Length: 275
Image (cartoon, rainbow, N blue to C red; front, side, top):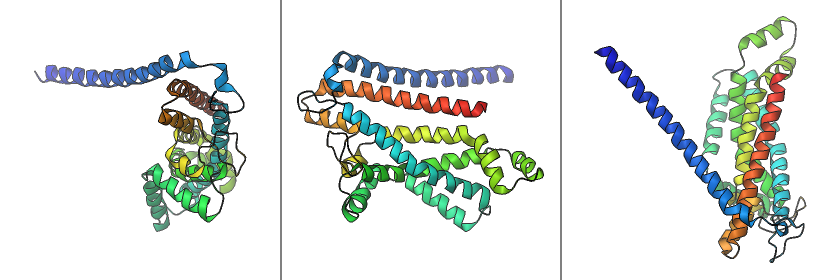
């Protein structure tokens, strides 16, 4: 009797797991399909003109701005997040008060809404530092936003590296610094890149923080010039209500850009794992 009950419970649990997986996949497939069906018919060559006008509403400047914003924000956030994670996991005393304070601060920053980061960026970078609405102000704000994510994922990846790797390196006479950079970091690189991929997704899809810092100018910006990313471009078009078809087409391109960035990052992670 008990074995029959156990088998029935196991089947129920298995059914719930499969049902949840199927529902998640179905929702994802529906969203992607809806975007593609609504946007692909409205893709046209004028949307990829180098100069934006009110007639062609070109998204090419926004595409270039998105790439620039992503690269600049990652260049600012990844080194700080990675080196902080190395300090917390490899150098700081386990259980010290400083480590606890840093981790609590990081977790607090992770839960702050993006609009708050946008207001901070506007008050500090745009107004206080007199950068104005610019690519640099937006990238700095995004770097602060994704810094806790990069730091926490990097720290978890470093913690997952077995201590036997470090002990073997020390036993061969390597110092701590050499062990960290030649043994620990390469072993943790796939996990670190997973955090970078998540950071890329947040950067590409962000609108609220960038409206207050980077602005909405439809141009290819310099470092201290205003520009709009693809997400802001889509938001502006849909907000105006005059170019909804173009907004759907922009959503398709945004989906493809995110897919390409994630695929490239995954390939890099796979290559580093083989090494």
